[in-house]
Length: 354
Image (spheres, rainbow, N blue to C red):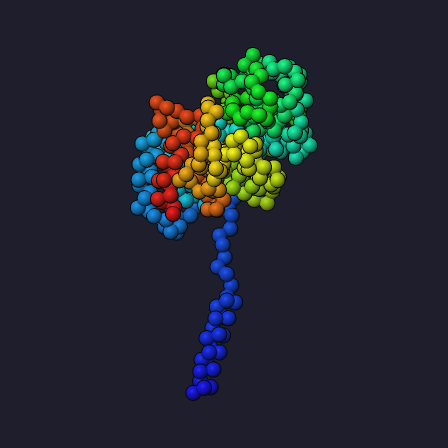
């Protein structure tokens, strides 16, 4: 009997060891669509373990809130892709200020190519007198200040012309959401000795297989593209600047971009909005609000946000990218960037994906 117990114990131990030695279940690889054709791998919602009953309420909400297109990628594969009100996969739409992150990335590429240094004064590239501020104050403004919305220039007008670029505070001492960021396009153009769009197309757009173009908007240049092109950039952002096997923008700079960039608004990086911080500020005010930028969204989310609720949400913990394009969710109160729409939308997304 004693020997039988010993044999039984050894059998249990052998089985446990065998289970521990079994190969791990392979994780799904990251997918990158071709840059030369329109093929894009999909993954069925049914295979995600999501709550399929919550999809229709999400779609109803998107339509109710004037959405034109909505897309979710997981590991680079399309899980949801919806178009509303006659919008189509090939139709272009303005990114508005969500396109600021394209400028960030292009600026970072110019730095890694040795064309500029973001800690240098912007005047080095733009020439003295590009603002109406006293020259000593203008010289304080670095490229980094333009990337972080801390130039100290007046925010009384969104039109970026020299008479409006007056001194308000020393660079680095005041956070204010402002279209002066577009001077970064002039910096890159001067540093690369070519138009910004030519440089952008060669170094970023073409490498990702994006369509689209920069168009002069009412107050600044706006990028227009189809929905999948916006998703391509979101996929680059999910992979910290890497596209397939090529590190297009070095990861050190990209990580700086999605980290708190100054001590005034913790929820802002280099023109990227950051969730999960203790406080945040919003465009058009100097108020500091307590809590998360988007409480219903994952804390690790970073986002490109533009007027009329153009959105790229990137969620590393879920290997997910979410795209929303369309008209303003609330036409009576259109936002420049973050709004209550984000939190309400994420409540609906969570109902599906959690």
